[in-house]
Length: 462
Image (tube, rainbow, N blue to C red; front, side, top):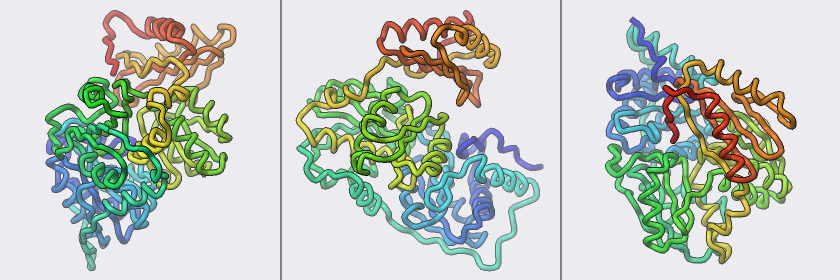
């Protein structure tokens, strides 16, 4: 009987509990199917520090080699290091990681040559169908001439490429606290920062996929508490927090206050536009702050608004030849990094911007943080469509209100906006509100929440 992979093959990747939902035998079949669907004669594979990652990635390599592909194993790496290998070597790639999920999870992020993403619309469904078929009929027959498996270290080249994209030659000495969350930042940061004028204060750099100190998910404020306290205690200039696979980076200022990823997006956008002669397109999703398109226009660029999700950002990056893209979730995308996301490159931009002047980080980013935002608020809702329709009916006839349906419902006025989106995987509505001042934001937020919640709908806010 064919396996049902609907629970682990997501919109953009493979992810599930090991070994309950998937194991080495399925990983081997995923490797074979990846080669079959992409038609690749060579691929590159990397993995994070989770206990199950080496065995799963090794099984994937066996499956790929059995279908005739030569496999390059780069071993322990961050997700953006795998994207670097895919881009620089011109090979399709597979990264074994479950990002910020708990230790029992693992997954695969797949890309074609040049770090082009593989999602449901670009090959992932075909890969799933092959694996489901093979699980019912037995493994595919190996080809007559199997591929080779070799190992290669890409960390030094990855660091050199990032440093070639940001001028860090004249920055002043900085004290920087970095919380790697026992994830892959503990592997990449020492090499990338090695020659910078940085007094590095490491936190949780020990690679440990059981995450003994806190979840490697800086999007949840409770996982930033240790970093914030350490920045203040050390009198540091800033703090950086990476997620488990170190493709996202969150920033804390010298006061221990978290900086909005939208403000970082605006800061990096201004720098990338300057680097490109004051011209270029910048992609942002529809729940980033209004400060992002404002800053882009002020610096000569063209902002393009898109749906939430990395596949949409990357597609728009390619279509528009964009120089940069950013999301509220601290994913940052660069044309000169094969349109892929790299939190490390964004972190280097922050270091260069801060180190190029005398002002503290809080003062530097104030010009990019212009509005009051609610953050994302999740509400459990049984009938997402009905509740969204009720919110629309209440707001759309009011004076000065416009609505659009690019991704969920967005309601906009000259003084505030909100977006209400349904989760694709859970019975949740996600609300983001922004306004010119805190009082207005809170008023709009509370009004919308009252409409969508009933007494038995618990708050599941991050």
